[in-house]
Image (cartoon, rainbow, N blue to C red; front, side, top):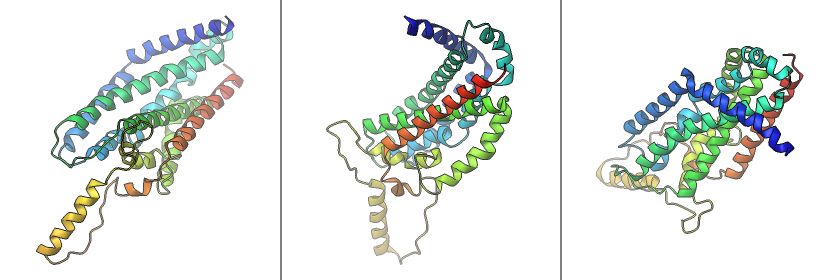
Amino acid sequence: MRGRHLALPTLAIMRSELRALWGGWLVRLWALAAIFLNFLILLSWWQVLPNTLLLATLLFPFLVFPWFIVIITLGATAVGSARVEILADGVLSRPITRLEFIVGSWLARAVTVLAVFLGAFVPLALIGLYADRPVLAETVTTDGVIVTCILVSLVLLALLSLGFFLGTILRNGWIALLVAFFVWYPINVLLSTFRVEEFSPISLNQGAPVVLRKSWFLPGEKKEQLDVVKLQQQFADLIRGFMAPPQPERRQRGFFREVEQHENIKPLRVSLSYGLATVLFTCLAYTIFFRQDL
């Protein structure tokens, strides 16, 4: 019964926060912009990219740029000075505790972030997978899509918790956003050069095609998929060798030019890394918030 009494205020706060979030302009514009941007990506690469690269490109706005700005802002403004002043009377008079406020606010924003991500990615990914596109056939496994969605969701929750943490320290959502942009993002770019998917969302985005084409837990699907793009390139080079003098090899450029370097990606390690980061940042945010004067 005590657990139930503790849960009721948290759920009430979560419902109130959800109504406030979806009633405001930020979340509504973000949801529309995320869907519209992914729709433009789908149209732009419709006749160019195979399935795995197309789906990984649809993840780019969430894992790399620009939507991490919105997610960190949602977390940082939840515990900013303006909101804390409004809720100070309720917290200090003890109808709700600080823990209930933090958990309820975090849950509301987690539901919002995941709803926007899944709403902007899943429908367009299904269109790209099952439509008759004039590109090379490439296998994308069902469990590969599920695992990818889980990993990206954990990354987004870790970013949200980072926003909570920065917001409690700096007491200002916009300053927290600037710190995240000029400190965390350059570190993220630096880590991506070492291809550490466990710590860099950019590197995880580059390794997403590997996750999408492998079978992880569902039976009846091949463990190893043929790299059709590489085979076609080798065949085209062979034909050109008979028809024209050899040309100096040009280095392929692009965001996904080193996909093969991520063949050893481990979803379990990635999920543990971002899951622990989510718990750590949230606990630190609560600890700082608990000790602050309202």
